Image (cartoon, rainbow, N blue to C red; front, side, top):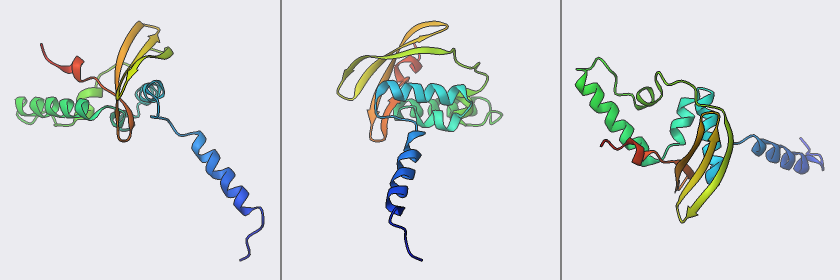
Length: 138
């Protein structure tokens, strides 16, 4: 089979178009929007992947503790533990970078339920939502 002279150009165009729909974790605000979109759409595995490793570890420990406390009636499933029986998040109207220093950033989130600040951390795979501090028990 002989390749047409335009094949390399078509291949480049397809690769460029394929990247257009990808979600981004290259900036803190994009990463938060991606996380919010996954939660909003019920894409919990993808939303889980958008959480920082320390957040995942904390939720895993809590799910394990709940399973042990229930005598096995509750499964040690951190996704179910975190996302079960949670209403959809409020519509986000604005996400802005409030601060960034090294591998830690804060994004300002404006939604129909008010304003909040969310901590983000940069990991090897990109920026992630870090809820570790808010998950600490008093």
